[in-house]
Amino acid sequence: EFYNKIDIVISSPLIRALQTTYILFNGMDIPMYVSWHHTEIYTAECDCGSNIDQLLKKYPHFKQSFDGWDKIPNKGQNWWPSEDEGEEVIEGRHRALAEQVITHEKNGIAVVGHGNFFKTFTNRYGKEHFSGNAEINQYTFKYQKKMYSL
Image (cartoon, rainbow, N blue to C red; front, side, top):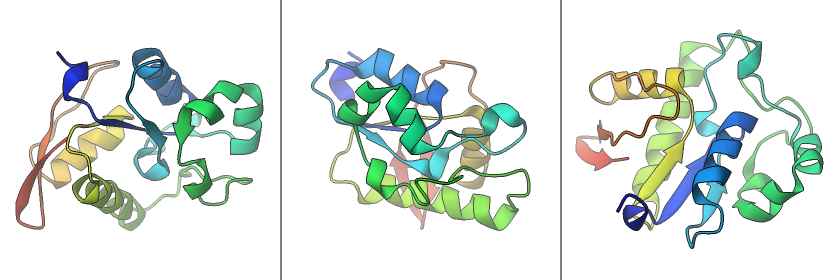
């Protein structure tokens, strides 16, 4: 029943999110898309990403399975957040994800990402919620005076 409600999956490009998305959705008739907006907020080294060219060389099946690689900024460099990422940048990433969700033509959108990002996202646009590892949640968030589900 869970899979019947999903029209598209948007994954963070950090390896652990890509692997989770691939395990859950590969082989299904559900498009998988990668987006850097909801990459984890930096709290430790494990929140750093990988050079996209190197990542796709190591995991070539990700290039074939996910769309959106061309939209990651500074693809050949460090595109992921650093420890000096400020609140303004985090707010911009929150806003970018919210706009990506509300302007998408599909309604059943699954987003695979990271706990601290979703905790701050839900705090900004509704009621704060921290997800455990591999936990599935449905969020309803308020953006520009309207309610949306994620």
